Image (cartoon, rainbow, N blue to C red; front, top):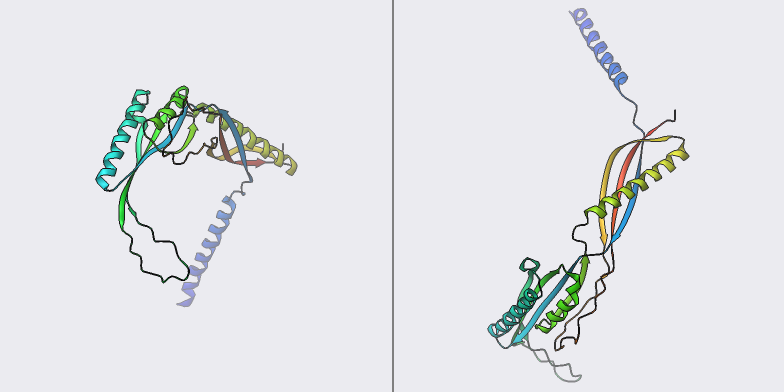
Length: 250
């Protein structure tokens, strides 16, 4: 009975070996590649400014502080509308109502330390809005009007390009040319040539001019003339990561 089973086992082993050899014959040689990164930059004049302005009010009661804040914020929004800023370009970003407490007396050396229990002495209300100015020729006048209307917080100005598509396309072309140049340089030193790209991935970054920062402006009167503002240029950068196939020279 044992001799009858041996040919069957031997046949199975031969079949396994045959399948392995066929698989080995079907395997293709590993593809040679090179990975490079290219960068392209383009600059353009910004056409939109963003402002973060706010109103801070204080009173003995929360209702009084909120009422005063609402009045000044309504005046601010009215001034923006008069200066041609669309309602869609004014967005509330923060509203807060916070109690104000008494502060402990200064420490006196040699005096006994007494327990201090803070008491609420008033309330502070803060309302901040994000403003987009699309007509930069009016930006200085709008800034002046914002302060005159009662805003006493200015958290900065930033500039950007509203539709940067054409600039980004030009930057991508420069980035691809830069990547191809690097790949051909390194491939030439290695004695091979660059083939078609296998994969391409891009990253977009913008580098706006540092915005001028304004702090609290409580008690400040409006400027006698429009605030001078320099918009400068904004630089857009695109980085591409490309994997090329490498081939032997003919």
